Image 1 (tube, protein in one colour):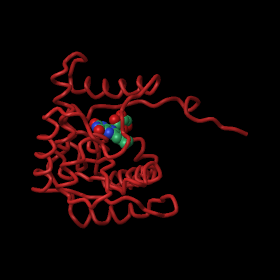
Image 2: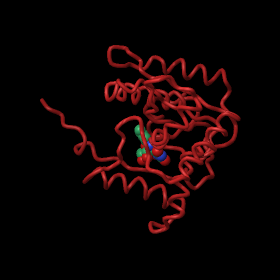
Image 3: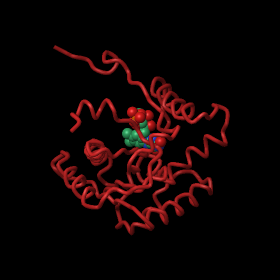
Amino acid sequence: MMSLSEILNSRYSVRAFKKDPVEQHILEEIFSAAQRAPSNCNVQPWQTYVVSGAKKDQLKNLLIGTVMKQQPPEPDFNWKVAYEGIHRERQFGSANALYSSMGIAREDKMKRNMAMLRNWAFFDAPHVAFFTMDTYLDIMGAVDVGIYAQTLTLLLKERGIDSCMQGALGQFPQPVREFLELPEGRGVLFGMSFGYADDNADANKTRTDRAALQDAVSFVS
Ligand SMILES: Cc1cc2nc3c(=O)[nH]c(=O)nc-3n(C[C@H](O)[C@H](O)[C@H](O)COP(=O)(O)O)c2cc1C
């Protein structure tokens, strides 16, 4: 079994998948284990929907239809991607890493849009998880759900299952809300496609770097 360090060193966001679904009992084991994630005051705000099979295809069609209308996103949470300075540079860096691995030129807007659209097709993954929570929880809940989601991705990877977290899946919550029949007061924070990686796909050749330790961590003593 891979150590946590090995998992962290080998993981990356996977954006192309084989069709094979993960067996239901394995899904249940992994999602049970993720329930151990810590949260502020142990409130466990995550309400997760794992969508697979024909339902996943229906939801994909709904979302693609919505996105193609080219209306502005209407996220349930304050998720405006307007990065500045170094954050903006890193945002461009990650986009460029993806598009260059896919052989898409910087100025090829059409192809970039098509690649972006893949988000709402869940990159053809056999499963997609939607992370929802009560909207009043705001940043308190978002921190907890982020920790939960990362816990989940590591547990998946431990079983050889890859994933891509997707803020994109929180951008058009209305069709998701209706499809999943979310109760009043609930919002869609983000989502995550997952399954077994297609190692031959260009999108999966994407790798990103990280800031040096001294640019991220200050040891104060
Ligand atoms: C909260 C969150 C939201 C993300 N949203 C998207 C997304 O909508 N689409 C996408 O392709 N990648 C998305 N990513 C993946 C990031 O682009 C990726 O983690 C980052 O570039 C680092 O690359 P790596 O995960 O391959 O190490 C998201 C990651 C996180 C943690």
